[in-house]
Length: 61
Image 1 (tube, rainbow, N blue to C red):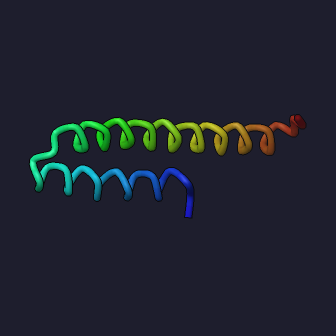
Image 2 (spheres, rainbow, N blue to C red):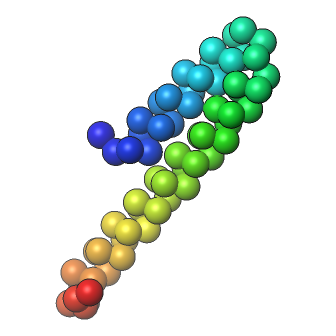
């Protein structure tokens, strides 16, 4: 499992727990962690696209 998937899952649980208990600080931290997970996901997707382009055009790095 990718690191960003675990981070996203952890953030969702934390956000739900924070919202359920009324802990706004915890819920806000979870939203930040979710944003970080989305950034990591985007980075992984961009790296995969770059690998595909390199394979298609025979570019080595």
